[in-house]
Image (cartoon, rainbow, N blue to C red; front, side, top):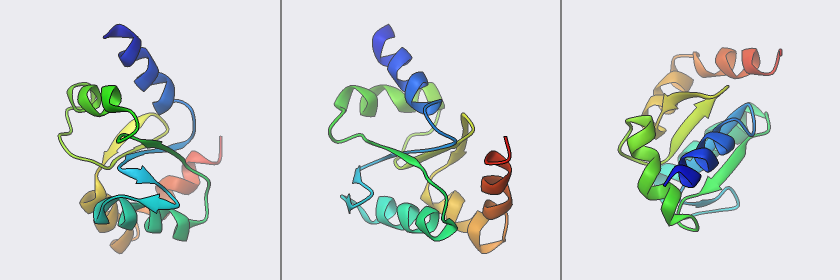
Length: 106
């Protein structure tokens, strides 16, 4: 189990934006993952995606670590932002782009 924890932490810190999702950015396997990827593609910044369907150990363990029960899960600079609904609302209110831009200043 600790190897999975370490792998999850490594994935979270692998990039400024990390999306744990069902499927891949080019082939999302659920509507929420597709919508989330669309939002981040629209922002025009690179992001790292982890396919939880191909990694059942991560799929099982991540909700325990993040205290977030559903997927996708979006992390920016190692911090859980939330899921599809949260980033959608942040995007609509104009709060997501500044957060993303701030992540790329460092």
